[in-house]
Amino acid sequence: MTLKNILLPAAIVLSVSVGCEQYDDSELSGRVDDLENRVTTLEEQVEDFQTRVDEFTQLINQYKNEARIKDFTEVADGYMLTFADGTTMHIKHGGLPELSVVFDNESQEYVWTANGEVILDADDKPVAAYIAPEFEVRNGVLGYTLANEWHEVSNGEAVGLIEDVVETDDGVNFILSKGGTITIPKVGFRLNIDYFEYGAPAGKTVDISYSLTDDDDNAEVLVYPDEGFEVTNTGWSLQVKLPADEETAYSGKVLVMAVNGNGATSAKVIRFGALVTEVTSAEVINVSRHGGLVPINIRSNRPYYASIQSDPVTFIPPNWLFPSEGPATKGPREDVIYYEVQPMPAEMNEDRQATVLVQWSTNILEEQQDVENYEQYSIKKEIIINQLNSKDIAVDKPMNNDGNLYEADNGKTLRSGILDGGWTFENGGVVSHGDDDSEIRLGLNGISTGKGVLTSPVFNNGVGLFYIQYSSIAPSANRRQQIKFTVKCIKQSDETEVFSQEFTQATQLQPETKIYEETMKINCSEPCYIVVYNTSTKTESAGYEGAYNFMKIISAYYTSYKAE
Image 1: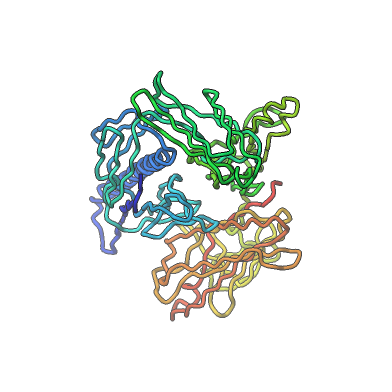
Image 2: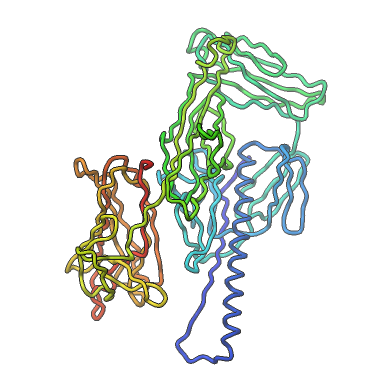
């Protein structure tokens, strides 16, 4: 089965043009109706995109998990599939905006691309295709969130996701519109063994469970071990005694073949190695109040299970953390299991915590038979998930050092002052905000007379996430200017930088109505502080001095690294 360069381009743009000429009042109602219809259409298309990308992600998961199709039916808008485990899937015709899937040789996974570029997560790793993007509209612009990053959809040609589906006697072939085929077999005779490599000490006996799918009364399981291996078939498991010599034990193999009464065969090769039971993710994972997908990375060649632990006092599991669909994986390799963290309720202002327990029970026969000491052979590792209440930064209340609120003057006067919570600013400006300019916001100056700087107090519990939403204050686009700023996190103890990232918005400055946002995973566990610098180097335009290089901060928040 191969999956080749799946291209899923499409795009949708909602544009509303407003002219300067006098309009006819009698047409106002029709225009409003037309706008409402466009918005409704956009919302429907967003919902449709989300449905189809979720379906495609499910298909990737089923393909990766070596699923089998029990029933296949063509319907008016696509195909209905029923899998051997009873799950159903509705694959619809249609395309997706600019997204593609390609096979990544390094990770051996199918990964998402946008406009031909592989999408990377915060750790610069490709985002696997079994994670579904989330489509939404922000400020009238269609986009999607993937790996906690927001991507706007650009113009592109819409094409079908699946060009054709061909059913054969053995399976179903999904032929993709830009080339490549996903083949999922139908339910048939099959030998099931969880892992292709099992970790065990040399000289010990490994108990390996197996099962048969769609077998008959005449089905047999035959075993062909390399020299030095001893195998006992109990009828539901294989007890494989490894050679005492480690080199022989870890270089040899056992071939297992199942044959049914019709002569159909299914085989697996089992190898052995040193035991690997590692959680390679951080022991403590912090998530903002907005929630999101939490990956836990596990490297293992022994069967394990992960479970969300109940509260030790109430014995009730948390109602805000849920397992999320991910791929079945075979060891030894880095597995990824996912948990979905629900957003905090609006009225909630306290941190909350949950524990995920990863446990490996022994599959060494000699240890299983040692009943009195059985528990000591179990390996357990805990991962703490903290959902931290975000602390808003009061950029809507810039004050002088005496605590008096500044008035807006569109950034014409450079000011220094304070924000609630101990934040300070230099070379800032106060600008109006909102549809009726009734609100104010802090801005950071960008001209050479003084670069704007916003500095936080020291956070004793460290910093997890930092989020900023911003825009220019320019009335129109200007190709000579651009927003450019840097965010740094500095450790208090020795004033070293633990985080630094520069942001530059295009070569042509966009007007004030164009809003940007950035989310940074700083993850500093020690006392530290944040500094935001306006680093624009562009030349000011005559008549607009300061306006084009000025950065308005619309909103910002941070989370602590440690629960408070």
